[in-house]
Image 1 (spheres, rainbow over the protein chains, first blue to last red):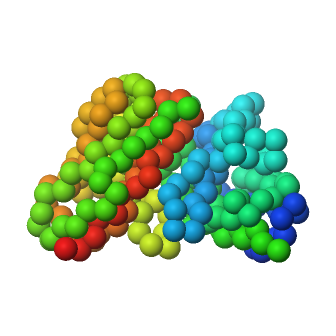
Image 2 (cartoon, one colour):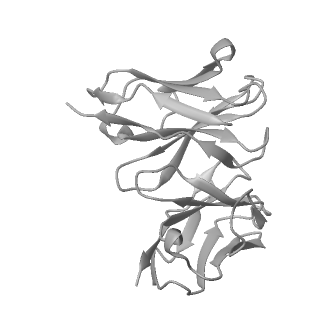
Image 3 (cartoon, rainbow over the protein chains, first blue to last red):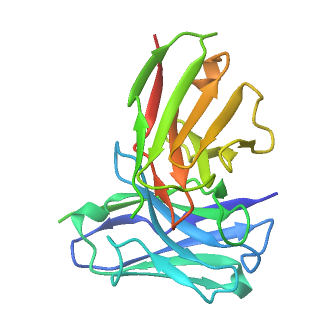
Length: 120
Length: 106
């Protein structure tokens, strides 16, 4: 069955970097778009980034553009989010999510989330 | 950017009640709208997509309607497991969530 497991969260100082991972199983990331979504403590959901099923297209929310990079390793069936120049407002639980279809689509499977805390 | 506005922000209801949540888009999104349920400490769960299509395994007491800019999520008879926060999401142009509606016990 489909499973997504995030890792890599933790406490980091402002201005530093962190890389999140999302190990996928039960399907291939080459067949579906993959997303990162975050949720600040006590707040709502914010879409962060997407990588298309073929890896050829990547899009980002304005709030992270130029600082975050989404990527994947097909051989490991794993999604990544490289987060640079972190700010306190990046503090959130980060979820990876699988697209229902390949393109215009909601998310049908989510990981359990990993908490990133940006604080000095 | 497309903005999504849900109402109400909080809804107090009892088991067995009929509950309706509204979601408005700042511009037309056709029927590219999804609804999610989230419980504390858990990931969101997809309930409805394309405004009215139930995801696999979702109970039939959940229904969705609307198109263009106005959408509703209805729970026909609220069950104890339904007390949660609900989010709408547009996926017409990138992806945007509403701010959420918390359904709490009256």
